Image: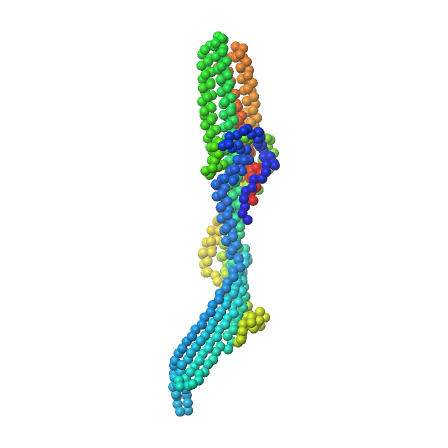
Length: 516
């Protein structure tokens, strides 16, 4: 059965981080408004790497089907007919009381041979082979001999032209080729098919993580642009107020220059922020729409919302070891190498095969039906049993294969252990980073609040002649930087959530996605 990825309905909120969807504004027909879940579903539908991973999985399933085919029943059959005519001449010696008489003769021979063969055979996973064969035949030969000068001829034909045989043979490997070693290739193919499923799952997880990072980059660029636009408004407001104060004589003209420089700086920052937003959108569009059909523009509508962690570090680490696709694939690789090592050890044993068989035969002069009756009634049975032994003197080929298999097994054991250590490290780092990002969000919020209060206080002092234009502009810049830092902190938290859930192997479940 072909498996595919089905996004489920958004009935459960994302763990650790939620998305808020503001009411959509009237949009241009060429602009696509995307929630984070919309972006994920679109990427899964269109991404080329997912398609490649799917074909890799199909390849593994084909390899499994090929391995299973070695144990299919094999039906064989053949039909043949043959007729021949022959003529010969010779001299026959005839002994009489008076001596030897040489008599010339002519011989004519006609024969017919019709044969049907029907059989079936099957190999078994425990090292046995079974075959059945049914072979009915018709053979008749007619010979006529005429002596020279004789008006008559003598003739004879086959007495029992209808014949048949039925045989059954079973051969069992007792040492080399016995048991699990025989089905090693089948077990490896099954594990390979499962491993391809896990690799497909890993490719989807990587895709989702990449899309989320690209999506939050767009959100950051959009919020950062809005922040700088707000900073431009503050700078423009300060410039307008300074011009009024210069006109009424309460402020020196030089102060206008500082305010104009601040406006110009923010305008330059807007240009940079607009370019960054365009680049972030292009990266997301490239990831979502790899083919030619692409929207003219996209708008990210979700915003990251920080929520408390609902899992402790030890539980997260345990979940990762149990659920990470890489761990499951490494475990399957180890199981396959164990089977191959066992098969290699089995091949170092001597060949000892037991063979048992039955063969029945029958014949009739008139028709085939009595022959079949005798065969099915086992009227004329025959039996055989035998042992076959073989063993290479040095057996270096099998010993060398065993050494290689044992080395691969040890390598897989070390690889599984190394993979587990890496998984645990990934979780610990992602968990600590997310904790740091959470504290960073709280600190950035406080910093932004303090900077808003500081700017408000500095503005009031300036209005009362107790501060300078330079200090007001300095506080505006500090507030802009604080807001940027707060936006970045929230985006860091959102991407940190993605990294932790990816490290735990829980990302698809957290996004309500299921691989079938």
